[in-house]
Image 1 (cartoon, rainbow, N blue to C red):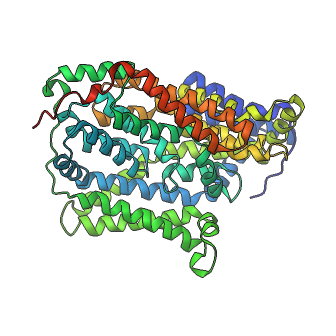
Image 2: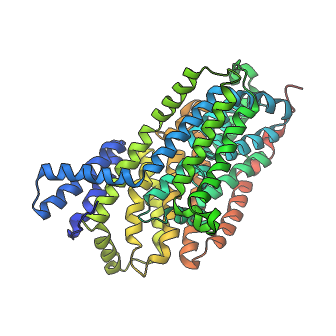
Image 3: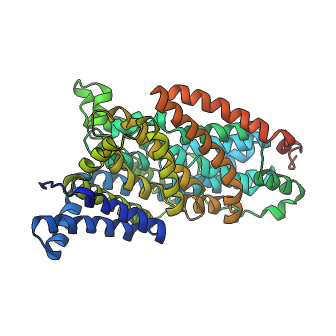
Length: 506
């Protein structure tokens, strides 16, 4: 479907500005995005001699166009959530927890295993939070790791891992926001610039391995040492016939077949290079992988009567239903981006403004990081934040002088979006982490905020370094050193606090 672009001057920035301001005020992203995109369509029809009826019709034309362009992504996300719910329902998560409980005998091992499991379950953050919490909570309770620390480890290995994992719902969501067909390759290039995700993962392992804590988390760890196991909370066992393989095999098949699917769709087996093949139509390949995971679950569960055929189908339907809210955010943000790019010339205006204002391009990554962080924290959604900002950032970086900053700026957008989402009390991921750990939500927010903010400050320094050096590697090295030193200094008064007691079960 063809749309004719016109220049509307400063009015072109009103739609994204309206969406941002409304989202910050109302804390509700759906109506904010719709009002923003509809206002853009009204501006377009006013300049082209239309009316409210034509504006409404064009809105749904644009929405239809964007849904059609991203149909494979919708299919992938629907199939992925179906697999997620099936794996959880099968009892495989609880089976893994029982198996792990026999192997893990120390606090350090429990914290490390929780972190590792959080990284391994990278296909979706909601699945990550609930699965890791369900599996590891009995083990961490027994070894006297506080629920607050468990919630932090869960939260810190959910969105920060998903946002840099190529085979995840987040990867295709981000790739779909980039304006051209190379969106998936662009996403891969942003990974070294996503400092918040990388530094958060590093911090989780430093905290888990050393046992050093500070701030409210230190008090939570001290408190749990004085409590009995009953005060920490009782965990009921889920009496199922599930086995570890019921968790591992469907996900493993999904990942392997997704990679092979991307290569197949892109023509790798016909002589195309692997890097070109996986970037050709990645969501089509991911859909093949998700379908393979679904079929694996069916062959694994139904013959053993882990669930009846009707229960299996109900899980698929319910799983697909769970993807509707985030998918609606994506559709609205795709449409808003289309209105701004293809109709009212927002990119042309912003690019000209940036050039005339003589804003130092070296400051662009850190400014975008701060803006994205504030937006995401206020709205409680990283998807809504990068859905609004990515189209704007890509338009800012369209001129030749700023094109080299596109990847660092997108990396900063994703990093800031995840930081705000990570520590926002109204974020669904934060709420799911509290739920998975069975921790009081306000305690999780209070204990996590200093950890997340420390990483964010170091990331801001990293983006300043990127602006000066044009390289992510120097910033990563400097950030890693700063983070390690900061943890050692902040926790020096309680060295090895969490390892002072022996396994209470022995």
